[in-house]
Length: 374
Ligand SMILES: [Fe+2]
Image 1 (spheres, protein in one colour):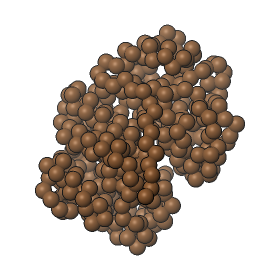
Image 2 (cartoon, rainbow, N blue to C red):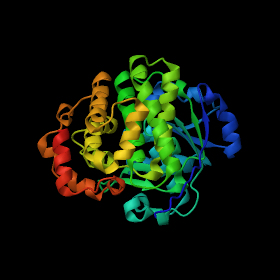
Image 3 (spheres, rainbow, N blue to C red):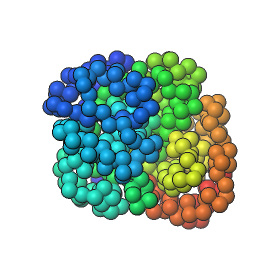
């Protein structure tokens, strides 16, 4: 028997208009001088003004996939302005950068040493600078997550995982996602659905996380088409944000083959493949790949989503959904060529997500899996 550690730590203000709670949340967290960490796009679109802070200290020099260099510049900004907390505003990139800044502001550590595969779990030994997270997309769920993905100066893209980097408080306001364009809404939304699907089916025993995951999957499935068709549908936007948050709340159950292969593919710098789109393409294939190893859970998913029984019906339903929301069916439609898959199976076998997939991953079965998605 593998005993679960069931842990939920972030306080969340959830709902349309909840951004108005920020001054009170800042006070309750005990920040006097927060550093707002965001990206240049959001800054230009007036998102920092929407926080209604007087004279905010802002750091926005962050790439789409945050690098160690941008985290170091953020730490410098944090120190120069004598900040005592961080407000992370944006999608996954500002959130991940904020977590990196929080670690380096409180630990005498090289950032790469904080990565999970470098033993970072033992090296991040105490609470980092308090973080208030305000997501502007519905996908990563990083606002309640214990992970950060950063491209290190060495060229490696590494995950930092620690309970100490989980935001203290999150303000999850669906009004902040109303302007997300349809294709980005679809791709980030399918990332959230893939988190729910993979964590629900993972081989880790944690019924609490499992219940959250399948509820998130149900909400995401029921609303993704509406929100892609009409971005101003606040009720559907709200359900997608709940789905994204629930997906991340279930991460402690572990992910699976989809993320194990999308991480090494996403690291191909010359391709710039979108994480959520990759996961959307892999989902029908992962259902077929894992069905017999997680039959009861897969059948529960079909029943919950109102899909007929069996592997093909479930996989086809996800494939049809991708088509309806404008996402590709195959990796080749994203510009992936057979040569790009060299090394992906090896990378997937090294990725921590593969360890919790319901079916044991091997070099041979991953090769077949990747070929089927190409
Ligand atoms: Fe993901």
